[in-house]
Image (cartoon, rainbow, N blue to C red; front, top):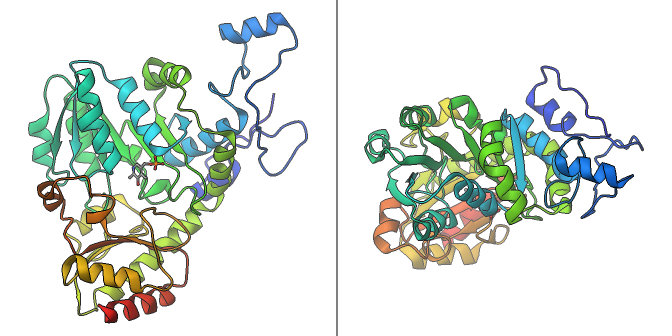
Length: 397
Ligand SMILES: *Cc1c(COP(=O)(O)O)cnc(C)c1O
């Protein structure tokens, strides 16, 4: 069997490079890509024993694959989670978590400010199976408490949220969940384990879209569910094995190797975003800038208590609504117009007409998604070039 280096009391940058290494007999230094769907057995008796679970070993890559295992072990080490399961995308991670945890008659409480597809799963898909929901303003702890019912099983949130970067108090919401006998699920895609580890604040399950910052270069889709052993054994394991949202070993390998530089990249994204946010705040036709570590962010203190840096996303409002916002976007020469985020390349999107287009105007207003709002995912370019690009584009509007 392959060997795995034993983590001592390593710090996160060492964990990111040295855990999840399962070195094969060839003693390769870089983690191997096991692009295989199946596995052979020495004898029929061995196949029988592996299927019975009497001996360890892989059977089929829908159930497990050595490259995928390395990615899962490294993610678990970084988030401080007992176990992890990788999935084909972030949405596969979210839907596998919710569908495996819930049954007819159960109830979910979730923050309104949520990635669009997560809202679709909770508001449109779960009710078909008799699973109810209440959406709350995530920043208002009292709303979480009053939404609780005896049948509430899951509380779901992301922080910072998309696109207005509002912060949810993880400790307070975890306490409400546990008092009510429910589990808190946190979507940690925006912060990543480099900047925020929700398990330290009481989360029970963390989900990721590794498509974003974990990949970091906009190449491959992927997702991860991190949880405790009981949730894996009682809910997630058999759901994933039998419904098949498994990640490709190739994508898992890309994301595994990307974890080695995650911490360096998140620091650089945060430094860049912070500089761009400060620059935008000085511009005449920018009416509002939202960035978690700026003192004018409404939950600035909470952000600093939960996060190690402000992350790579900045939201800002341009005076003149949609026509002005479109003019600015179209005048940018470095920054690309794209609804993706977490790339080395800076990407800008107009949430009202793209990521949040399917919401009603009232729902958008509740989230602060106005006609002039832009979401900028600050990449790894020199922040001075990004500020110059924004400056010339803002002059056009
Ligand atoms: C992108 C994203 C998802 C969905 O992930 P995919 O990998 O695109 O399926 C979920 N949550 C958040 C916060 C995201 O940004």
